[in-house]
Length: 398
Ligand SMILES: Cc1ncc(COP(=O)(O)O)c(C=O)c1O
Image (cartoon, rainbow, N blue to C red; front, side):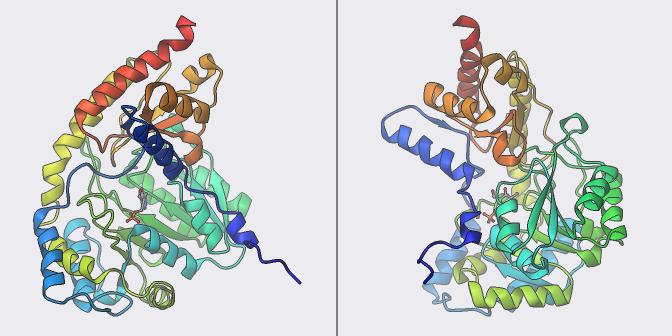
């Protein structure tokens, strides 16, 4: 008789590295240490009041019952209108479903399109959950090594090469990128999408940071391109732009038949996304697009500029200006070599000795780097940089 034990699939899934760091940071905090937590990707701004008020109203008015599994029809329609108004993406309501956040949207998308054993290209650095999500869909993640010398944007030739060598059927894109902040030019994205079209690959485009762009970086999505529209599933939402982090709400948009299949899976796995959050999201969809982000962007940008300058002045560290999201992906290869540590040891020591929580690049498929989240007040970043500088001088002093 087979013993009762976790199956192979579950054993192939690691715990999220970012959660592990947060846990250690919380432990140190509980011990009374002055921890500066720059590990998590959660904006320090509160959820906008009109959205919060709508949620309270929904509870008071008894709007908390089950909705259709793919979301309230009026929110699917509002989501489609928002995708058009904010990004110029053309979907009708039945090409959009409401999910319980971007993560479940990715899970529904991958569960719908990955066939058993399909290889899926994941360009590094990648958001930590992609490889696990591909495995959970019975696919095989194929990591494309990072290209820091190209501002972390792979060329079409590099993607084509990786696809041909592995026989990949799919590609996960995430721009603006977590952790690198990379945003390709329209021409760069177009040439990657052309490769996907030529090789018959589908694309999952994780656009959860789409509104957070700097230095005039353009929004561009595979779904806007003629060769991409019918092979792309777009993951979008207000998680990062409006701090709907714990609200668990997001959108998945794509070709009608694929969306209908994703909706069937969602109906069996989670049912509907939180009804109260759906009611509140109607308000988020209705506000003029980019209004909330316009309030936040100057603060994020100030922090970004501060980090680029201040981190760049620390010997052994380099930082290319991120063009999107709210992360600085620091090249610490030189300093790690000098200290004779890996990036994982570097971040563990930075936390244990200087009480600054960051995430090692290895978690994102880019060893030698580490990620600072600047979804934190400027004064915290200033304090963190002082500690980082002191830490970087340690090996010289010893
Ligand atoms: C690139 C990326 N995709 C998806 C998510 C998950 O977002 P949600 O909280 O909406 O599930 C995150 C959260 O950190 C992320 O950084």
